Amino acid sequence: MKTKYNLPKKVIFCKKCVMSNQRPSSISEFLHKRDRKNAQYMKINNEDGICDACKQNEIKDQIDWKDREEKLIKLLEKNRKKNGEYDCIVPGSGGKDSAYQAHILKYKYKMNPLVITWPPIMYTDYGLKNYNNWINVGGFDALVVKPNGNTMRQLTRLSITNLLHPFQTFILGQKNIAPKIASKFGIKLVFYGENEAEYGNPIAENNISLRKKSYFAAKNYKNIYLAGIKISELIKKYNFEKRDLQIFLPINDNELKKTKIEVHYLGYYLKWTPQEAFYYAVKNTGFAPRPFRTQGTFSKYNSIDDKIDDLHYYTTFIKFGIGRTTYDASQEIRNKHLTRDEGKNLVKKYDGEFPDKYFSEVMEYLNIKENKFFNICDHFRPEHLWKKKVGTWKLRHTVNQDGVDD
Ligand SMILES: [Zn+2]
Image (cartoon, rainbow, N blue to C red; front, top):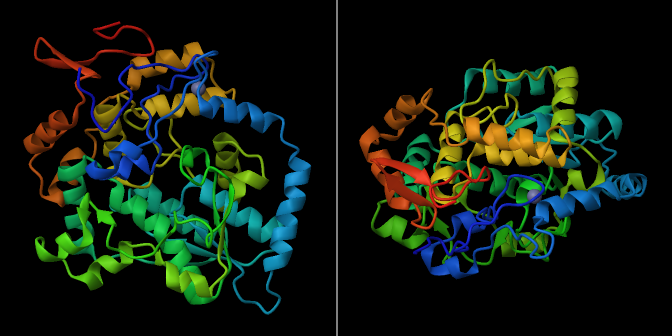
């Protein structure tokens, strides 16, 4: 049976959480066809049947957090500016994790962070309110970098038709913008949150210097793809202008050599779980959960500020058989807020639920006919994961072992 995206042929589920070996690292999700042989997927150990993320989590329990905090304090001391200028950057759009990070850096560790926002493609009302509260209640200087709306819309549309990835433009922009702004402001320190989300990337090491690694920088833009298309081709065939694409691209290596910017994950230094970040953000920055359950999952407080995000997780369900519940439940199981059985039940109940709440609005914004979207989905379904039964697509394998081939 044919697979797609170089996915592992045999579907295996972790014995501890509900994740499968079909989960791509976030970089692999972007790869152009040509590079897919390098795609990395979640490794599940042959002997004990446990995935790398669960193993990583066990290590987390043995970490000497006091020692890590001391390392953080040293790093902060090295970068602290005493003249009132910004000394670090926290990128974010108003979610609980960035709210927590910026707040703890400013008020506990007395740093002077600049908050950088690459806004969601389509802000939800409550997401925008959380953003405003973060800045106004939390008390931060903030810089919003908003790309040209026409380019954003066209690229997002192309990301769906070419890659079935509605969220690529947002993720790329958010990842790339902070080091570029850091360079402009002469700020040497950028903090991202937890790197569990980055699992499997070449930057698995939590603590990286930008100068040594290429994830956040590029030597030249020749081999960079946006929406699965080469930059040169976007300009020649799709009539994009270089000046409109520039904002989506990573910082240039040459520019980087002049600076000594470092990117760090605060989750490496401080132990935190999504639930605790949520409580912290509620208390300190006026964060509020979504007023209703997020479609496709059971949670109310993870990634709630973009209307397109719900659709994004639906597409991971199509491409990898992994919906938002699988992601959320696996994380909650690792943090001991759910048992595996509870997680399995939630997967059965909600995984792959179609997010119809904002669907029409999103399609209208992107100028894609609803039928066309479903046709694109079918085109991206790997044969080794899906089987059509009496006119309906069914998963061949599920964590509940009730797939058509289980
Ligand atoms: Zn696992």
